[in-house]
Length: 150
Ligand code: FES
Image (tube, rainbow, N blue to C red; front, side, top):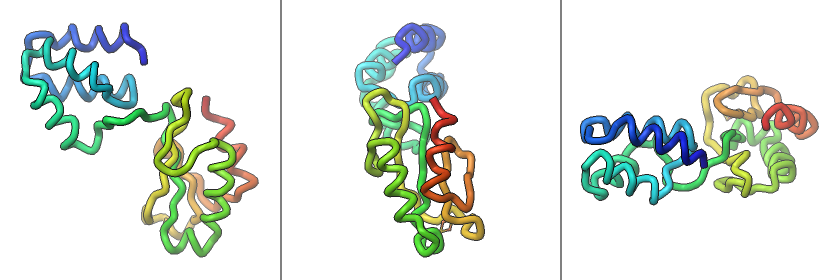
């Protein structure tokens, strides 16, 4: 967590309750998730009740209340990708990252997720990293893809 940057964001919005969503969005972008102690600081600085900060943070899908890695890795597990070998791909990605779906590694490099169909079945099985789609993915090629991210 980059505490200095987070402190800077909080300072920028001090005393501005109407800027709550902006502050949380910037912190989410910077830190990839919203730790509870940071939300307490936001509540104090922006002069809004902590319960309101929690309400906003839990309501919007953009915000994460659990640790996330710098890179979001999705393996599509929809039916078409499944039929095209998504399970083997997922097995390889799990092996490469040391994670199961829903987990984040201790260095907060990767968060692994299993996703349902994303509408690109014709290029399945799909591996998606930070929104970038890698189609017709094979377990062998997955290592080369993940190597690009640090
Ligand atoms: S099933 Fe994977 S993109 Fe549709």
